[in-house]
Image (tube, rainbow, N blue to C red; front, side, top):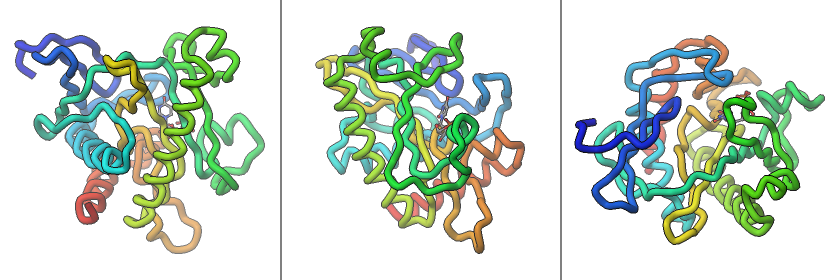
Length: 242
Ligand code: UDP
C-alpha cells in the first residue's frame, strides 16, 4: 500500500488504512496466519489474496440477500474498500456441528451435528484470551443493549441460513464460523471483518465414509499442511458456482 494512506489499525491478518472518503476504509489482507491467540505464527504466500477474494464473493452474496455488510468493492486482489465501522468487541461464533473449543469445554462429541445452530459469544480481548461471555455480562459491560444483541443474533442466524445452503451447493459442510459486527456512521449495525477459511470451518462433502477433510485454517492449527491448496479449492468452487 503506498504511503498516501494512513495505517489506522493493524490486526493479526489485516491492515486497515484511511480512505479519502471519511466514511470508508481500505482493508489489506496479509499473508500472516496465527492460531491459539498468536502463540503459533506463520506466513503463507497468497493467503491474503485468497481470503480477500473469497470474502468479497461471500459479502456480495450476503448483500444480495439483504444482509448489511461493510463491503463496498475490491480495490485489487488483496485489498478491499469497506464502510468505516466502529467495531463491537465481540466474536460471534455460530456452530452447526460440534468441533474445536466446544468439544474441549463440554462433553459433546466432536463431529456431532447439532439439532439447531448454537451461538457462542466471546469477548474480543487478546489480554484476556477472548473469553466466552454471557448476555448479562455483555450488558453489564455496556458493550451492547439487549435489543442490539438480539439483532446481532438474528442477523447471525440469517447469515447461517444463507451460507449453509450456499456452501452445501458447492459440496462443503459449514461446520462453524466467527463473525464480527460494528456500527456504521449512521449507527446501523452491519457485518464487518471477513468471511474466509480463516474464520470458518469447511469440511469437504466429497469425502467417502466419515473421513474429515478440512479445507480451512485447521490445516495450519493442526499442522496438516496444504493450506494454500485448501483455500484455493474453496475459491475455485465459489468461483465456478457464482
Ligand atoms: N474462530 C476465529 N477466531 C478466533 C476463534 C475462533 O475465527 O479467535 C473461528 C474458527 O475458525 C472456527 C470458529 O470460530 O470456525 C469456532 O472456533 P472454536 O471456538 O472452536 O475455536 P478453536 O477450536 O479454533 O480454538
